[in-house]
Image (cartoon, rainbow, N blue to C red; front, side, top):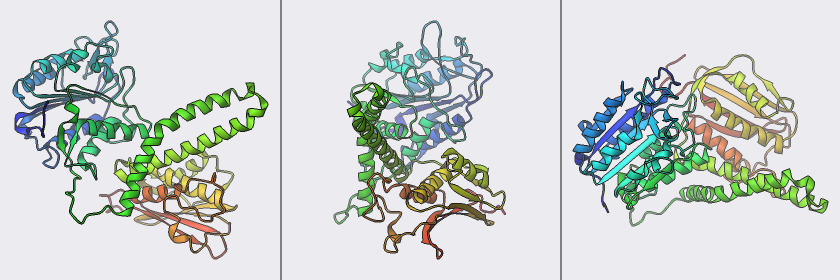
Length: 479
């Protein structure tokens, strides 16, 4: 069994990205994938691989170029051999085997136009490398693990680790508007930023589990892995977030809370998902049950939904705390985004929209709606009608106000309304929110470079003001 970090001087990496296709949808994010992976391996803080030991193939013209690169790397590597592919995964209609698409590949005619997974497996089997790692970010990549192909041959070799972006019959995901594909985006973010509080190095198993947790939390395809001879437990890369402990060091209370939130969210996700599935069945069959059981069924369904909402919010906070949330900014009219958010939540009749005209900005519309949803939901739950949503724009910033006509926030509670699990007033029923929505709203606003503040209006009611930059970082020179 291998121990210790890999030796970059005796290691080889082959990175293949297929982004442009003649007969398949384009995957522009793949270009960013490959560049980010190359940067990760070259980083001294992560691995420090010499540039000459990393072969990068952007949109190779044919399977032979990929095959030759793998064979050469397999002959040269004596410590670690890594192959990474991002693009379309195709299945041979006749054999069911996995192929990696290239520019001229066709979904119904893969032979000769795509790279058979076997062409990767064979050089890996013959290599002298002590560690062999294959990472596939494509649809159906789980087939290389052996369940539905001959990939089991490689999975049975000592010192082999196979990492797939999707299950054997599942699609991988390239979210529209995002810089990376879903799987590689989480992977490179983790490797770049490291894992605060973890050890000096990260193993493949640690990397896999954290990437898997982040993707599942975001309801994205679940990656798969297979480890042979405990390679996954050996140190693989340096943890760029590692901080050596000191004799006097103690974990700050805020860090303890963040770690607790992340651990609790991950522990609750699986049982809550199971409870949700069972409660849905109960709800569907409620009409056929004894009428005396109806109140119990309604209680189970309602409380399960409430618990599921709490876990969703905990997962959102955990992702924000870990720094894995990536902004997908684009040019938008904020006035239109405000109207769309109200419509999406069926609040058009409950909230008055007051925007003087178009409000052009460059921001992440999804994150904007997360902020608005939390703040408006808070106003509707705990304030009173009418609720007004307004916006103003300045050269470099925009301001969005949500005002209600209720009794306002108790003055002693104002400093704490954005704290996690805080609920102003001990008389508030337990079902009225989780005490997490405003925390998520502020964390999201700060991620976007802005903030939120809460005040009481002189005429009555509470007002939340969201401040956001009109343009993403690096574009502050715009008028």
